[in-house]
Each structure stands twice: as structure tokens, then as C-alpha cells.
Length: 204
Image (cartoon, rainbow, N blue to C red; front, top):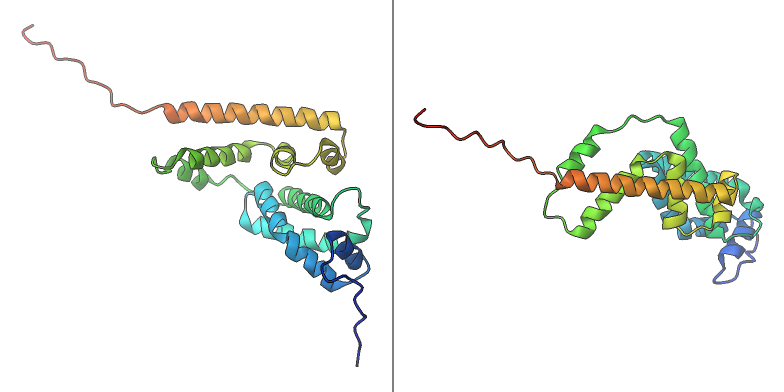
């Protein structure tokens, strides 16, 4: 009969304690980390890949990579931030592996959106559409900074570049988003009006 080693984790372990346990091969510690952070990791994968199937594939690859490389977490950032970076890596790898063709039904769905949607929902739909138009690397920088609050240094480390390069890419991404949203707003404001026939002239 095999006896499991006695756990050294406290009753309410911190992420750091769980990460150390996982690095030492404790599957239960890793499972607890996954339970805490998987929802955020999956949401991030979905935002980057814009495809539910690809997002789940990326998440599985991210979890496998996290388990294998947990010992490399040095504590310079939180465990949650580190796991999100692993998820981003996996998501971008998924995008590189799968050259998906644009789905024309997405544009049809947006064009057919009910006119009674409130302003908040309409703005959200427009923003999601605009984010999809950005190059994957630019989209990732915008998401990491504006949606997940990572520092310029953390983003630079993830992309293997300088903080100045991150700032420049972020500025380009924000300008592109602003232009896309303004263009979409102008297009939506146009209404197709039937051409008025010329008045008939009587008694020529």
C-alpha cells in the first residue's frame, strides 16, 4: 500500500505557497492554482484567439506549460500574472499555428444587430469588433495594458523587447482603435434613403 506524502501546505495557502508545492510536484497544489486562475486564463485566451475552440486548446497548452515550468517562477511578479503570461504565449502560438480565414458571418451578425441595443452594449460590440481588426501582437499589448493592467516592463519581458517599443506599439494600437471606432460610427450613422423621383412637369 502506497502512502501519500504529508502535505506541507497551510489550511489556506497563498498562491506563492501553492506554486512552490506545484514546483515540488504536488498535483493537489497545482489543481488548486488552476481552480483559482483558470477562468481568467481562459478569458484571456478567448480575447486573443477570438475562437472558443482555439481558446480551449491554448488553455490546455498553457496549463501543461505552467505545470512543467512552475519552478521557473522567480517571484518577481505574482503567480496570477505569471500564469496569464503563460496563457498569452500559448494563445499567440495557437494563432501562429492556425491561419484561420475571416468569418463573414461575424460581420453579418454585427450589421444585423438590433437597433434597440442600449449604448453600453453597442459600444462593447463595436470595441470587440475593432480589437479583432488589430494585428495579434498589437492586440495582445493593448489587452495586457488596458484590460489586465500589466506594467510596461512586464509586457516588454513577455515580448522580449524594450519598454519604449511597448509604449510605441500601444500608442499605435490605441490610435488604430480610435480610427476604427470613428469609421464604424460614421458608417452606422449613414442611412440609406430611397432616391426621390424628379417632380413631373405638367403642361409642357
